[in-house]
Amino acid sequence: MMRGLFVTGTDTGVGKTIVCAALMHRYRQLCSLRYWKPVQTGVQEEDDTATVRNLGECADAEILDQGVRLKHPLSPHLAAQMEGETIELARVCGIPSGYSRELCWVVEGAGGALVPINDRALMVNLMKMLGLPVLIVARTELGTINHTLLTIQALRSRELQIAGVVLVGEPLPGTREAIEQHGEVIVVGEMPRFVELTSDALETWAGANLDSDSRIAGFVKSERAHAC
Image (cartoon, rainbow, N blue to C red; front, top):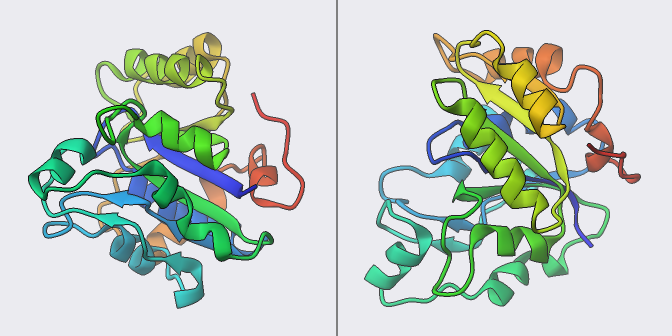
């Protein structure tokens, strides 16, 4: 059984990759931490693994750069079809199987929770197979409350454990409170849009503002914490 967090978003481009890099800064002192992006589309335009490596100041041992890598910036099932491939979940989930059980993982999904992976499976199916608690990343703009609550509902209806929520962007009055109240979750961080996004700036923010009460730190330790 893997330990760690699965990071999903309420949409594509909400800031999942930056949050993953922040998680590496925040928790690497707690355990042997490793980042993994199982499915990446649009690799010719953007490499999320390289972004986390750079912004998270990750050593080679903190990165697993294996998985499905597709050229086109589309939903995984469509990007795979364009390359004449089918993404097989069992094969993807088998990639980290040979690594030590002492490792803690930060696993980043592609797109949102219900993005199709193939003709039968969605991203939530990959989450279920990996068995990790889910951290939701949402951007703070009009519609954030609705999108976040829908994501929470989709995860809970499939009996996935929710570790918390990270909001990205300028704070909107009442948004955090509404998500916590109606979603019965913890907002563990509110990440700004950095004027200059550097590893130092991200590390400073993560140390002071990400899970400052250590409410979800237990998910990346040997003993899992009780989540919402």
